[in-house]
Image (cartoon, rainbow, N blue to C red):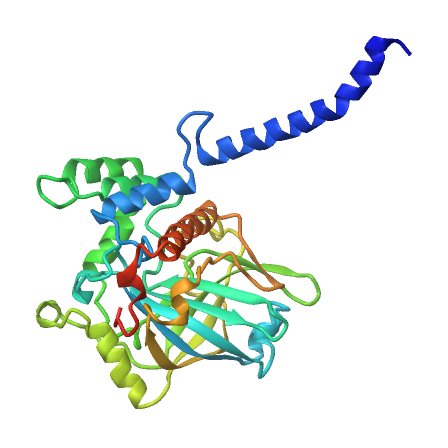
Length: 361
């Protein structure tokens, strides 16, 4: 073997290592949006949401910043077992729940009456360690049908420095580019406001794939339907309400006993929009009451166990999987980015307000 070939053979391992390192660096740069032009990344999404909040609130979620922790249990009725092999829906299976009830927006001190959207997040942990994380809202469908629409909405909603409100021209352009938003705006204008988290229905909005024991796959959306009757809160009452009336109401109701919601699974039929959360399914779709959620305690999030949970809706037990809905994937990315930012701020002791024991928010 010549000296040249001998040197070449010795250089191959180093060249391979360099190629791998370059590939990893390139992948990291692409993921971060540093190359390939401006792309939608979780970082850009989260930056847009932060800008829309008007200021940073260290240690708090970038969206749905104001909320309380709740605990309880979920008990399967057994009727959901025909749709999924997930053990949490087996007959009589009881699973501990760590959850969070919140309002929309990035201000952890916002008056409850200013938030149109209410939310419920849940973490169910099975006896085998598998988890089912849910992030549900009270709206019946999502405002947009793509991650680009999601991002454009966040950008257009940023307050104009001159008025403190979104620029009407930018909102009009948003509606022109994403006309599906008109339907959500109509819902926001006309749907009655509930007067309590306890009588609010929360919806998964995105679709998921349920796989039964025989391997059959179906597209499913779910809702937590309250056992308490809906009660509307008129505008005049909201205007006079205390800033934290939702948390106050929750504590008062729990003092009288547990609050309950039924988990209702809605099964898609061929032709239903399973990858588009802006499209509601027809009301005559098959529904299955798969179990009951029972909440019996609440804690302030600053000292509660829910504070450090990322309620990523794509963390699912065997038998349930995400759909191909791109908005669902985008939500998971933004949740992760928000989680990393606030946990870093807490770890660096930059978020005393978010970690004060006994805070009611």
